[in-house]
Length: 424
Ligand code: GLY
Image (cartoon, rainbow, N blue to C red; front, side):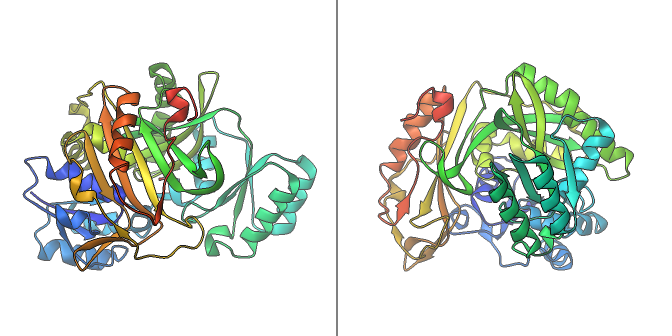
C-alpha cells in the first residue's frame, strides 16, 4: 500500500514511524516532512492545504491512503477533495472539522446533545462582550471562534485580562478567527486529553494523555504549543473514560451524524475532570502534538490498521491491543521560544541514541545543513520513551536527552511531574 501523510512536524514523524513498522506499508511519502522524517520516508514539497494539488499528487504517485496530520488541510476541505476523487483518507470533512474550526459550533453541538461543558455566550462586537464581562465578572475563558494556531484562548483571571483579550481579538490579533468571540464560564478541575477514532458511527478509544503547555518547570511562564506529554493520563481512569464516552463523545458523534456531517477521523477531546466528572473543554479534529508522539510510541504498527479501518468504516471489527505501558515525550525547543528565537544552531549526538520500540527522537523543526542537523523552528525535537511504568519512561527519556549536545536548546526536566507525584 502506498501511503501519503500530510504535515511536517513531530506528530507526523511519529505517524510515519508507526506506519513504517506495519508490513502493509510499501511506500511512504510525507509532505512536506522534515529532516528526521527524511531518514525513514520520502519527503515531497506540496501545498497541503490545496485539495486539487493534493489529489493530483496522490493520483500521480498511486497513493492508496492519505493520513492528514494538521487541522489546516482539514479546515480547507482536503479530506473532502480526496474522498470525492475516490482516494481513501483519514480525517474529517471540512463540515465535521468545524468541531475544531468553530468554538461556537462545538458549543451549539453540546447544547443540542446535552453534553456537559461550561456555560457560554458569543459576541460579534467588542462593546457587547465588554459589557458582559463588566456585568458577570471574572474568571472567564475568552476564545476566538476560529482557528488561531493554538493562541486564541485566554483564561482571564481578572477583568483587566478579560477586557484586554476581548479588545485584542476584535482588533484582529487572530484575523477572521476573532471576528466572533466565545466567552465561557471558568471550570475548576484537572485537564486531560482523550483520543478516540470515529468512523461516522463507531467510536474506539485509542488512548489518553496529559500535556504541559507552559514553558517553565512547575507549569509556569508563557503558554507554548506544548513542552511535553505523557500517556496514559492517570486522572482519566476507566470510570471517567466511560463517563466521557457516554455523556460527551458518543452524543457528539450521534449529533454530527444527525446533522448529515458524520465525523470520521481522530477526535481529540480536551476534558476538565472534577471529582470524577468530565466536562468538555474543546475538541480538536486531529492528533495532539506532542500527545501523538507518546500515543504512537504505545500503539506502534497497529496505529496504521486502526486508521485504515477508521477510513473504511470498519472500526466495529477492530480492537486495540493494549500493552500495560507508559510513554513520555519531552519537547526540546530553541532558546527564546515561545518568543523570538534564531534558527540554525547545531544539534549533535543524535546518532548515538537508540531508536527502537522504547526510544525515538521525533523531529519537529529541524533541517539538514552540510551533513549537520540544525534547529529550524521553535519546537525542534520530541524525545520520546516508553517504559513499564511512567518512572521508567521518565528515566529513559531524560537519559536520551542527556546525550544530546545542543547548547542552543531549552527543555523542561519535569515532564510528567503531576503523575509521578512530585515536582522535581
Ligand atoms: N498539545 C495540544 C495540541 O495539540 O493542541
